[in-house]
Image 1 (cartoon, rainbow, N blue to C red):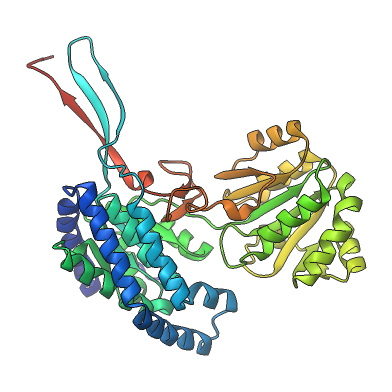
Image 2: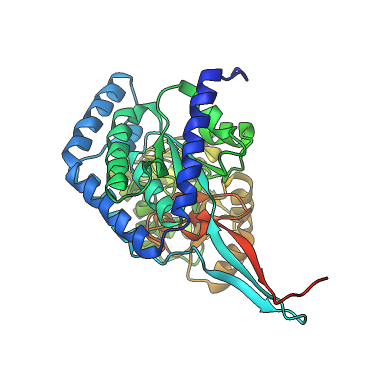
Length: 427
């Protein structure tokens, strides 16, 4: 990729960012009541404009299908009226959440009488770079508004018409509330240069958050000069331990893999303890076969898949590291918990890992030794989600370790400042 960015694109993005900075300073002064009122207005605007959004989305879907976009990507892109209303409801849920701005994280009185407080404040201007997920457009706008930030959205070209329709509704609603519409901006056109100009607008943009496939995330992390919160891919494992109940294990694996295949918290890898294999795998493989799942298995796993009539292929080294986002799963029989943990440590993307077991000691070892943003015991990987955790809409799931990790909601979109009050002290 060329390192040269079109100067006209740089100027255009800089203009958008400067306008966003003005809006961010205004947002930082709003009360919770004012922000919540605006969020309800945004939700009403999305509801009212649902038919227009669906019509714009149909254009994107037709263009995507014609370009050979994979079915799982078309599913992420697709908005019907039910999904549009769900997106609007997510804004209302955000309005009902506690406002993090102004929260005192910690504070104390010093011996010299100084009063010090660490207080949450908005980040400022947040850039979102994401692929064909138009729900992110609204979620990011709502979370940014509630946390007092302006947001610049760079969605994928596959969702261009949908994003234009949604952002048009949001900006009109902001203006109708007497707020600066530049609190929500959409970067359209400009190809890759627009995204690169956004992630190198250091001094104008305070934070960039990428959401999408491994290639997009890698590009943003390596090329950005603006601080980045990495929302990684989800090579999520379910490990069925020797002490697992067969029925529970089957339900958790099926839900983790098949509930929705195109999302980052879907399971992509299955590990089964050798002592549980005969008890668990015949029924599990039959259910995976019924769900249309293709098992990329080792020899031991594929013997059970073959007996159950499940589609199966020999596992490759690449399969262990693949985020399939489809009805495919890598699967291995392991000798013990140690081998399962070693395998996860080598191949995990750091997103979500789950164990199914009735052995509390095994569960404790798993949660202690497995390094991931979320570690689940006897629960589906599909629960790693801001809404499911009770945070409301999320702006992404961070797989890094600095500032934020796991589902990112309102507090993760703030930073802090120290406020020090005295009565004439000098040093």
